[in-house]
Structures are given as structure tokens and as C-alpha cells.
Image (tube, rainbow, N blue to C red; front, side, top):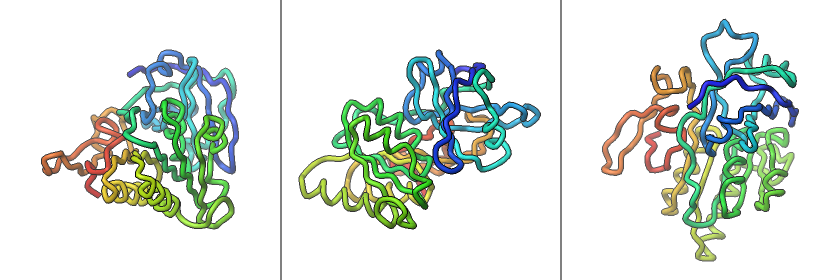
Length: 259
């Protein structure tokens, strides 16, 4: 874990309200693994004690990328960052996704949950399938990047404005059925809203495959000291325990989580 001052390289507007921020952060970028996150102190909000956690969107060549949506005062201030500005970043934090899938990797993304999955797709040696979902076309992000990396991409939106109309779990059900018919093994990776994560986890357990879920909890310290992001978990022996998402996660296998 490092606490570094990172220089802004560029900001790229994506769809409505979404941004990709690139930071020059050589040491941190080299340590980062898909599924980990960083804690960012937002400039001009230094008086606020709390940093903001962001999944790592990508890390290569000394450049760290994060994806964020303008939803409040902190992220609104981030919109004003310009090349040459500096931000204070702690990371990489938490654990990461396993990088050796036991079958075809199927990535399930809800909205900007696509961020850590894009980093994961870049690092996995095996190409698979991205199932991307959102409320509308504006919430479907970075799918072209997956296609450029050689991944299959399927999209679902709740309003039908892009891809198939409905929830992304409908696409997952179709894909699991197809893989079952072909006798293939799969491994699931997911990041998005809790309801989607729970649904993906239930399907992984029912199908007897591993499902890796990136939990999103309100994080204050980011290092496991404040106990703001606790989660009920289950050990292999069936006993329950209380973990800290920022420290013991944010990646958990579906069978570990007690919803």
C-alpha cells in the first residue's frame, strides 16, 4: 500500500455523467491487481476528512485509471481536475480477483461496475464473455474496449435503448444454459449493485461454479480500522463471521457471503 501524490494526465468524458480519469502513479500502478481499489483525497475538499474509494479501471505503464460518475459534491469537484493537477491517492487496497479461471470467464457488469472487470479482462490470459447491463444506453460503459481485447460482448438495458431489453441476469441465464448444453465449464466474475450481485451469486451456487463478487460498501478509512463496511460472511465449515469489505474484500466468492 502506498500514499502518493499522483499527477493528472487527462480526463475523458464518457456517457452522460461518467468520466475516466488517468493519473501518473508509477509505483502504485505497478502494484495494482484487478479488483483492488484506491482511496482518493479530492482537491478543494481537503477540509473533508473522508477520501473517496474508486475501483481501479486499469493500470499499465505507470498510469492508473479510475472510472467515476458525478453523483455528489466530491465527484463534482473531480470534474474540475485538469492535466498537471495532483491528487493524493492511497492504494492499492483490498484483495483482487483470481486470475486463473476454471473454465470460460463470464464477466457480469452493472453500470460502472464495469471498471474492475475491464482491468480483469486485460489481465486474464483466457478470453471470455462480458455481459453488460444498465438502466439505459448511457449506463453501458467501455464495451468497445472489451471487443478490442477480443472478448465477446452482450448488452441488456432495462429500457431497451441498447442491446436486449431487461436485466443483465437474463443474459446470464441464457449463457449458463448454453454453456451447460455444450458441457463447458465457466467461472463468474461480477461487479455492480447488490441486487445484481446477489442474483449472480445465487446462479453461481446453483450451477456449481465459482462466482467472484466485488462488494460495494460505504467505506470511510479504506484500511479496515473504522468498521464502517462490515459484511456477514460464511466460513467453509459453515460458521459465520463478520468481515470488513475494504480489508477482507472487496472480492468474495459467492458461497462466502451471507445476504
